[in-house]
Image (cartoon, rainbow over all chains, first blue to last red; front, side):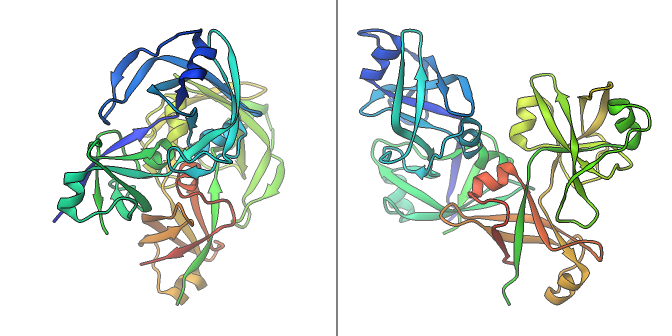
Amino acid sequence: MEKKIPVGVSARHIHLSQEHVEVLFGKGYQLTEFKPLSQPGQYAANETVAVVGPKGSFPKVRILGPARKATQLEVSRTDSFALGVKAPVRESGDIAGSAGITIQGPAGEVTIEEGVIIAARHIHFHTSDAEKWGIADKQKLRVRVGGERGVIFENVIARVSPDFALDMHIDTDEANAAGVNNGDTAEIID
Amino acid sequence: MEKKIPVGVSARHIHLSQEHVEVLFGKGYQLTEFKPLSQPGQYAANETVAVVGPKGSFPKVRILGPARKATQLEVSRTDSFALGVKAPVRESGDIAGSAGITIQGPAGEVTIEEGVIIAARHIHFHTSDAEKWGIADKQKLRVRVGGERGVIFENVIARVSPDFALDMHIDTDEANAAGVNNGDTAEIID
């Protein structure tokens, strides 16, 4: 059985805690939705922030909402070199000992000591997809993407939940190395 | 037999014709060597140029010498989006119908109609390495690189010559997608 999955390409983005939303945008501020993302309940916000590293900065980084427990900036390895930060490859939420950064908003700025990661490539499976294909949460998969510039990605992490929609998330380096775009199709090899 | 190869990561760079060297740096100007590259006779020059696309620019792009028949700018796909040019994935030298760009030097500027490519990943084999491993010129290989972020690259082009030194060339997107650095080791799978 062919196991085909839509590819979502994640550009650099940031998740903010409500505390940091208020430091950056003002007391009591609430993020506003620009458009929904593939995962239910998640959205790209209208708001952006600047992030400033020791070597470089990005003036407009999209915030993804809703607010989370901890602030987390997700960048590509290319971005990490441009910022001058040593961001580790991590699963979302696993930020202990990761890189720091300064974040600037219209109402203030905050410097975090950790929270900058390069997101480990992963696939969101709805529980029903995972059952159908015999895939377990946290399983590591090999996944093929791309045409002429085809690539097989190893160690793609399966994440299974009834709250997820089927989608493979790779970053811009991975997408560009394979020559793929948002909405292209990936195939699980094993 | 394990077929292991050193990896060379190519950042964006430019090859210039002698005619364009003189437009950009002045009549009779000769490129000067900064340091030798892995391929015999090739060098990184002391000189750099600015390249300017419709969406963005890079102020300091390294020139690789010696001068060639035709000017060729090699960028990553990430770079091509930043510049705003539609660069195709091509083998070096195959520039017909590729993207254009404006190049600026201290003595002048030139706009090329074609010459901007994303270099197709490839391996330089000395003839003796290719014979030992049974690899033919132009053969397409699958090559594994990286550790935790491991990737198998398909369609890696073999280039065989007595003038070449054994080296796999990938661009910064490919290196970053796989988490590898200059001097790491790749392995031919088949």
